[in-house]
Image 1 (cartoon, rainbow, N blue to C red):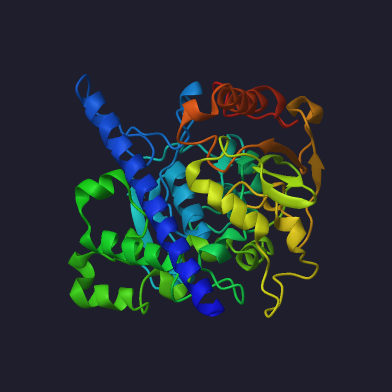
Image 2 (image 1 turned 90 degrees about the vertical axis):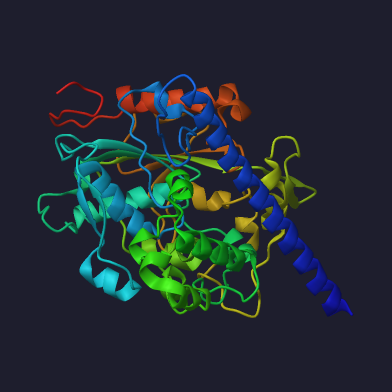
Length: 425
């Protein structure tokens, strides 16, 4: 009887979560379409990041005309996104690498950028990067690839092509939400048979297989290099993907394995903090302690889609019948969260080894900035307060991005003579 009740509760939770995510996705999508239709009445439609003229960063990129907002896959692996980001900036055809492509079962080459968005990018023309969530880890991987000279035909790359990295709710050390959504704690790579992520997988497969140009013009999950379209794989290819025998879910080359604690440790094992790069993180949380118990810090301040997740993550306990993700893991360290990521994961890279870091209260506390140190500030906010909807964050939104842009323009520079991104050549 108890087991039946627990199963019923889990099914109800899965149903509610699915409906909430579906409705929110429909809201964002319809908002994008409505915005473009409204704009088309007065001028030609201008395409911004992801959702037509609907901006991922809530229009923050308009604060400076030299800001670029790349359109990378939303569910693709951090490795694949890092490769795409490099060619987005430099130009050319995306090369995922021969060995990686064979291992993960997709085409070696992807989208072609006839003209790079910043083709002069090099050590004398370095870039300030701002990444949200997994985007922060993508930038770290790009920097490591530059240091390792991992791009064929570009033998002169170095870590100094990156001047600074600013992370907004950066996913540096994984998140326990991946396990709540369906990743197995045993390995951090596979999914439970029935979970939210399985429903997501089925929806994405059908969406990409149908390959409707109008829909994909507004939203593309980024799996084009897996050739999931009906034009390429036919009906049997669809069946193969649905059964889990093909596609990114068969090889683990998608975002969720990278966001488990185990997956993040694997990524971090191959990445460094570089002595000439400036690092700054905004770690978000929407929890507080009441009588020693971690609970959501309020109802009105948390997005409806994230409130239940804030509560679940604050109460999450890692299964005792499987090995912990790392030596010294404690549930209480991972209770503070923003509804998507644990706050401990966002401050700085700390697994498998702790990187140099410094906690600050005010942005001015870290002046003058020193390179090679992860400065971090904990902000009372949920995971999406500083993206998508500018009005929701209010004045806090402008203060956040104004501080970021000011820090990049005025306070971050190298002692060597260089042309910085905010200076005229």
